[in-house]
Image 1 (tube, rainbow, N blue to C red):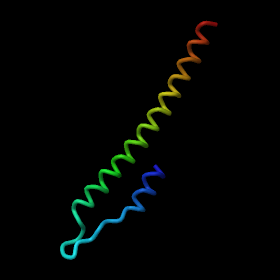
Image 2: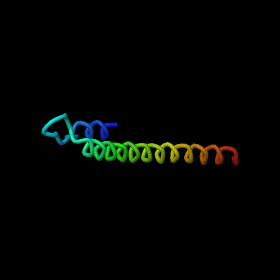
Image 3: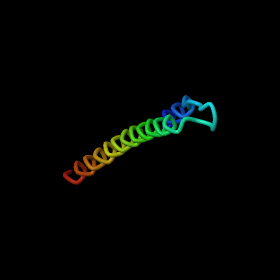
Image 4: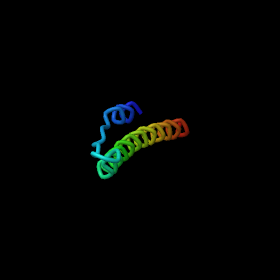
Length: 65
């Protein structure tokens, strides 16, 4: 989650002369943020799957004796 917070803190949006921020730039930033979320999610999913696999291996060893 620190990766996401750091990314959000570093986000800068291009400003338009009139009317706020450049909408295309905002969309690009949101796509980049989504990629960061996906990366963090996939890392956590792999970590937890490894823990589950390790637990299953321990249970199998204990059942075998």
